[in-house]
Length: 401
Image (cartoon, rainbow, N blue to C red; front, top):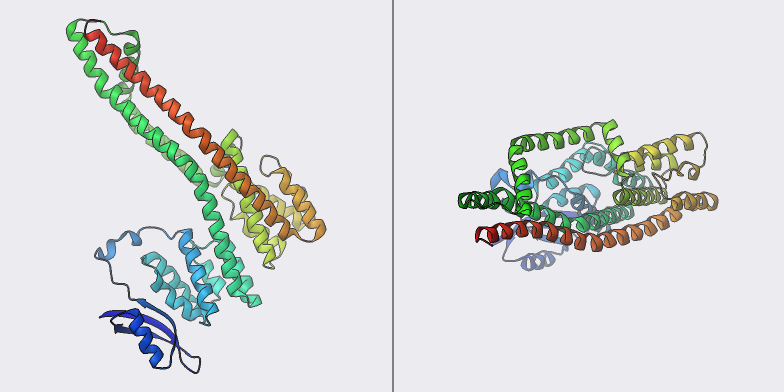
């Protein structure tokens, strides 16, 4: 007999939930129907993992996809007639990871203490400001189910876009790292042994092999310095990036890097147009929408430019005139926003801009992926070929050739 949790409604429409042992979920559902109950949900009770309190679920952060799935599940339960608080109490049992369960449990506790749903979500760092604002509007308009679906869709689009960008650079990075490892092994281990062997025979090394060994000697002489210095340099860059002015400078510098800058600019424009459009479509004012959108953009330089635009809009300036910086925004964004402001359909225009630039970004990423992979393979082949040629020339010299 297994233990199952269930949610059902009686003939009066009241919600009933609890746990009960049964041979299967189907058997329990049949028993509940025999009692005159309308079965909403039946699921097996989760058993504690054998790892106790040291499972990965306790240390892994809450991901965007966890929030996305939770919002979809909430929308389904609200559509079924379950109250928000009851749905939030059921939701933690849907997820195997402790941090995600704790997040939804804390949200439910805050609502039970008198907070609004939006304020309860705002207290969770894992919840995007976009979701908080959409939920706030949904509570005010009585369309919470609809905004939960809209929020989940927005998170899904951002997740897929981020995944497509990362996947384009994943394979070349793996090949590059593996090549560094093979090259380091040959230069630091194989070639020095060949040199010792040839020196014992009294033979002179080929120029190509000697050049490679000089590189090996240099690397070995500075190995300790590099092993200590490189992590310090990386830690310093990371510390600068955590400091707001430092991150602003680095993010601005990225925009001037030929390919990375274009990817960052397009990605930021998509985040701006999509987020601002979703917020405006939900009935949030332009100034509030701009303030929230600033926190959705990963590039701090773009976010800072948008903050300046909001300040100008606050004193009556048109928004499109503030989005003309070619280093931060695409020309199409300013032109289309001008059309949207004139026609009064800014949210629809922004959605079209987001769709267009998202397709452009995906096309750019796919093109880069197609170009980078063969380029990396050729570069890797050249490096490995150079090393192997030096090795075989040394072996040929050892044979008296």
